[in-house]
Image (cartoon, rainbow, N blue to C red):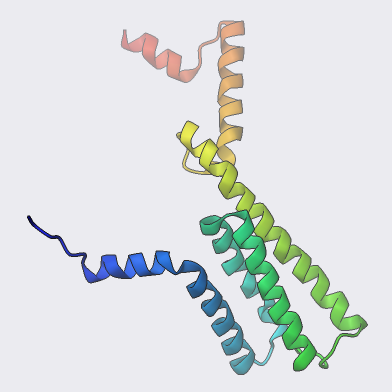
Length: 166
């Protein structure tokens, strides 16, 4: 009996995928601590948090993306309440009017990207196009082209190449 041991790279991949959610949370908190400790213009870096939420939606689905965006929003609101993001600490009209739209769009981004992932699996299995959000659009265009060419008697380029070959 031969026992195959995984390579260190395979073990690292297994570890990463097994503890993906914990690693993701640690990366979010670590990135926030580094940004808020090193960067002077903290409010400008709020758009950085769209990247992890998009990744969470793509790899983890809608629920994971929305929960991670809520986690990021709660961390940012906590930081605003305690220390302030280029504003005075606390929640006053200016801070609320700045942070609430950002938080709403961050949560909405996680919801939409996570929805693309779940619908993309169904579309991907039926489609040959590599861009899964556009594959349903591509299918409708190609089927419409086939229907009009059959109705008018005008051959599409793929049918022309077949008739020339024969």
